[in-house]
Image 1: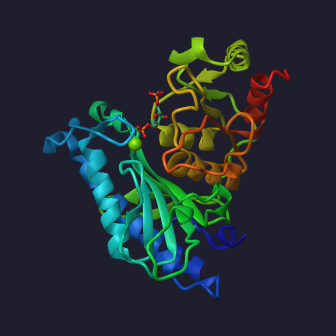
Image 2: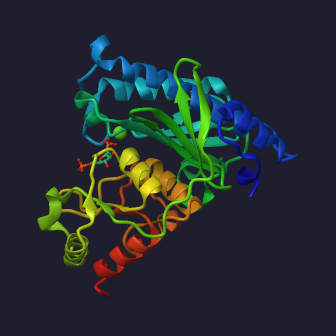
Length: 332
Ligand code: AHM
Ligand code: MG
């Protein structure tokens, strides 16, 4: 496919985006600009995260987000930075953010695109200096150009994504994204202030030996899932759980494995959000040969009804996801 043909390691992100645009003669450059806006905002967040302890901006801000979870200061900073970058960039007409209840109207009513975003996922990990991430999806608006974004623009099925990605603020910072022609990963070089292609055409292994799940909820898991976990233990698979979705997903993408956030007694429909966590990662998963379901159906086929709706999430190497689903559904 297009992305796979020209990608060469070391290419700067800006150049890579420009090359991709040239391969599509009718492309207007708006999506390219939007991706650049996200990359720029991520660089600013990266700077804030790296100096979080020093700047005394670590820790809770004393407020709660729309889902009643303690908001970290950096959550809010990330939300503001991304909203500002997307608004000023001019290509996005509406945003759904984890940190905000309703639609964020950027005022760019002539813009074509919608963005759903978790500006800082895994933010409870900041206090303990563990990696965090940003997750985003991009859709084309459904409503006519020139008007404010609508609910229908925002509640699109995952199959409608035109691009999706994440930024991993880890031991190095990476931007991983797809426009539907494979998945490419870029590593940030802070002294140059630029992302460079380091992981072209990322492919998830068909099978793996790592399972990632918060086993604290084990007693409330469905019986079938308990049996799957037991099967993983019987085979002495490795258990790895960072508690930062982007990090757990990224590791499994590189090494093979499965990540599960199931239905528990605390989170009956799972904890993760369809619009700005699961759909983006499901898109990347499928683009890399991995699989993403809610245990019963494909994540990308779920028709969203609410902005902040949650779903159980089974994602990773296809053989592992299929087996976990068989156990869950009592077929094994
Ligand atoms: P957040 O968006 O409020 O940060 O929550 C999402 C995070 C994921 O990154 C992670 O996989 C999960 O919550 C961990 O939850 P738990 O502590 O219940 O295992
Ligand atoms: Mg979050």
